[in-house]
Length: 324
Image (cartoon, rainbow, N blue to C red; front, side, top):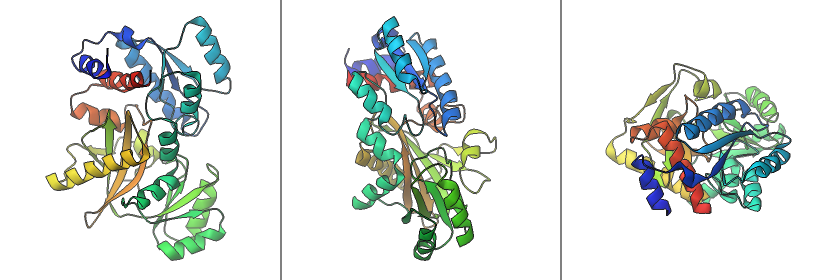
């Protein structure tokens, strides 16, 4: 069965789950996003099993290679569903390992995963292509903080370069707060990014199989869409349709598509953006293995075009057959 026929069979709810073979769902990991990945992995695994796919879960830990070899000895592993968030799973390293092993996998390849995980490299690439992203400075020591503050002004957003789920991020309005936020961010990453604060509305736009899904407008009483707002809070607001007029929504979708294309993102992903009070959009980052929890955004966007969670999981998995 070719890829287009497989996609259509999934949409028609008549897919033969045997076409996927034995599927390893990789989740957990050993980074700061472990707890979110465990929830995402459990949801994905349950969906695959409900759909009749021969799937099993693997919590990626220190002995991952040994466990992988043991599983291969039991029965051939035909493909992997990567639902690891952050470093070790979303940064190209797991993708590279699976490439070497000849195992097809979901999502983006090595280079795209690595670029998207690196907020600094992403911004440099977007600026080179003329795509809008907030002004920034890279911080390597506390001594850099004052120069960054003088160049960019306050308020600022401080981010570890290689973290997701808003871990280690902070909004700051004074040099003292910037120094403290830099020290805190360095606990998560040797590289720290400070970014011009954009006052306005946050949007997220999901991509599935090259299709841009309906944008979601985010609202939260927090200072920004932080870890608590993403995964724990019940007062976060998700607006679909997003409330933009037809022209602005088309601009948002096109910018999101260009952001994914520029990094080489394939299969699925999610773009986070801001719109300032003048109506201009700014790219923040791209996630190549977004969350799949009960608070997650890709399932919300997919539902808006008629894909339930189980169907969404199969559509993501179907992309792995392109790598066979």
